[in-house]
Length: 167
Image (tube, rainbow, N blue to C red; front, side, top):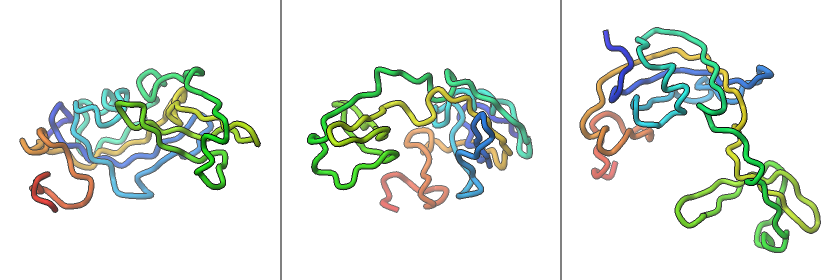
């Protein structure tokens, strides 16, 4: 029986809750999550907890911010003049905007709006949170050489799909 080790494709069901027990995300709302162990596709703390598990294992994992989405950083909260966002209609608290910082895409959450300024938070929405996972391992298999080179396809095109085949 395969165990979860580096370069194995793992499929799992999960429910993610916060400290208050509120459901943040769940695979019950969509298909199970599939990733390659050791590839950094899931948060480090959960990847560590997955190691050594087998198909059918059910467990809970409490992941501290340092092994999840990191601590919150106050310096990532900025106020900008509303006129700089005049091209956006109906800016509301909770909206997420995308910006390029030169090297990568950054997601900014609107946390406050008034007539003059918009306050944006570049922290990940789950930064600073302890994450509580209920997990069930559904499948484990060896990753193909193609998957190790190009990554997994989460678009439903199936096993054997080449990243260059245009599926």
